[in-house]
Length: 211
Image (cartoon, rainbow, N blue to C red; front, side):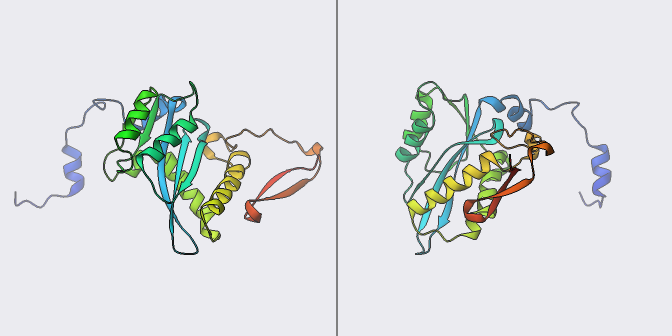
């Protein structure tokens, strides 16, 4: 309107709702943490310059990876089969959070619906709406894949399984009160001295009492 006004002044006089018109995204995640899984793909280059795709399913409660697999060619049929393998019989969660990747085609959506799972599709270009699985993928890259050379699909599967063993049983999380997804018991000093056990090919270690 031709007026130069400081941003803080505009903020001061803007009308504010006393509360959001509906629950926030974070509130939704918190309310359904036990019934929610998140899914995503990430790419991994190999020593021969091929691109592999890793598919990961993360249960929000305890940050547990319930399924991970690797393929050179992603299809809706392949992704749908991963859901079936991850949740046999009546173990399917209530909600599945995913992005708008074209791989999640009609076959995938029909399979998920037939399993009684409600899809929660995040907004375009909004990875922050799927934060837990995005954080997991970042951890896999920083703590593992950025330090190794991947040869092929089977090699990548072995690397990821080795990392997930460390992730589930040794790696601590602030949101889990500094415990691991598979809870570790407290080991008091009287159990002996602390020893270091190499994991992920020596990239990481598990520390425990000798006894």
